[in-house]
Length: 121
Image (cartoon, rainbow, N blue to C red):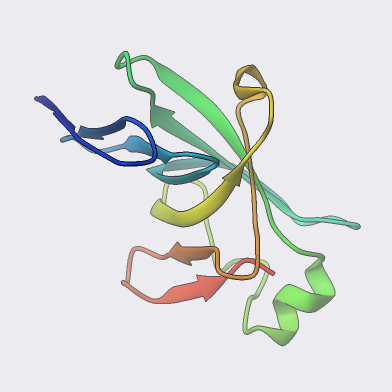
């Protein structure tokens, strides 16, 4: 079931299901299944399958900080595993929405299946 809710900064779509994208202005909150984790320099990446506003599944690339900074923040290589259902809040949308990219800013958080929240920088 899809509901549209009013927003002063733009349209927000709430998808009631296992994965979704919520957009406001230039930030996004996404939920979905992890399909790939790249733990590399200069930035680590998490790839997730999420549903867009039309209900189509998209593979979204979430850019994290560099591995050394993630380790200092409590991350390990296996903090996020393929198949985990995770949520990213306050991610920065790319200027071109066709690129399926979400970046991390200082306030971006990832919620693990356990409910624990991790910073992405």
